[in-house]
Image 1 (cartoon, rainbow, N blue to C red):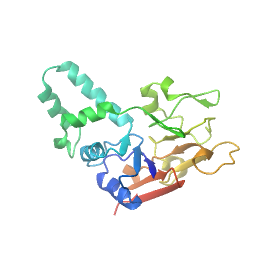
Image 2: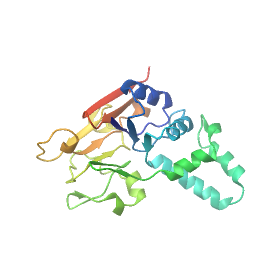
Image 3: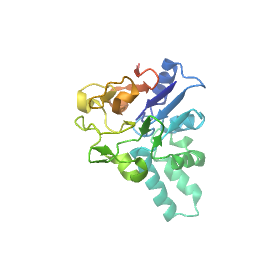
Length: 227
């Protein structure tokens, strides 16, 4: 099975609970649409867990992008003093920063701004819409894909061949509840993923203690909640 989620924000234990809930195995795949880090207590532990599992893929969110901008600025100021840069980077994470190593920094730097497959595209915040159609992520800047605030609007139902998965803004700001929002294509008659133009995945884990994911094959949503 293929699963997609977003905006875990350092909730390592809750993510493990989600994987247990869905019976995640080596034959499954999970895609995380950005914002693995910040707000929760276990950002570094979560990143390192993802690094250790080849069937969990992640893309760049605005929080990872902010971390990298800070890292790049520090490297310009201290291009040869790697030890001091790493120590300062550890202070970026209030709770488990001591676990940060260069392999984890390299992992963050390797995250792509989008994932595109046959039936869907994963971005963090959104894609530009021109003439009612979604612009290809290959023609879009990373800054736009991680920071856009317009794509989430419920009235924007773009014409697109592929469903766009995104997060960035908690869905409760739009519907009052921490739940995944699925938007059907205008006039769509088909069921499942092909019937949606976009799916909003950020259920506000850091706000509500809820984490959810979407299953591509079954067109279902699975949720777990903090104890």
